[in-house]
Image 1 (cartoon, rainbow, N blue to C red):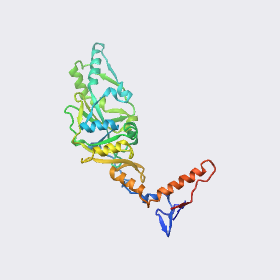
Image 2 (tube, rainbow, N blue to C red):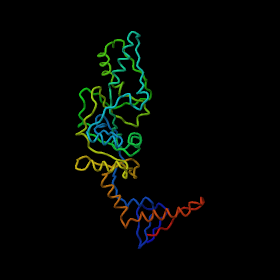
Image 3 (tube, rainbow, N blue to C red):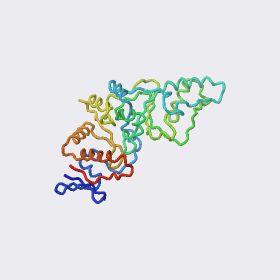
Length: 318
């Protein structure tokens, strides 16, 4: 059998004439592979609660295994955040007589801890689909993303929770009013101004599309009834095998995150089905992609020492 690659983009279908396959667009090879992603190009913004009806926590594999074992997320100190301005916020007071309030504010602020999540970006791009989040928080694509149903979370009674707002300029200063002179008064001030104190960041962090839950009393957030899906981004990585095993005999979806080559965004597919189809395709004796790939590589290897050589390969034998 002879395969001919035609450079002209005249059609989108492969044609078989006797023992000759004519491919007029290299993308037509997609027809040999299973299609897992079906996405509409239409998208719409999300508003209010629909922005965080599902929230996503991306982390390393080791952290995920601890989370899965206890079905809980640990609140992390605000002093450990990666935003320098947020970490080192200045505290000031207009009255020298009330300087002790600055130390009180420091102590009270240290008690507050947070858990961060990513929200859906719009109706099309989901919270698990940020390459930046996978790169920064997902152990360079080797980690895990947990999807949670917000309504099924067991939120602590006195916690603060809200969408993070992003502003072009942010004043990195907490000004304690003159009439706040007690610890209880300071706590009331924090509750009243929680949005400005905990849920505003500079515009450069907007890619995180963050939802936060903050508490000054709780160590953990119970997520035992809220986990709806777990995502991995490396089909050959250790995370895939471990998550696959942990999710057996559960109702939690196991999803593989990959690029939808039709519209160029991340989408997800049933992880087990995707991998099985991938392996089946590779092992299929009728799959012409493997011999084509091998012949292309051999052709390149034979010419790579000649920088002026034409690397166009017209004929492939099948």
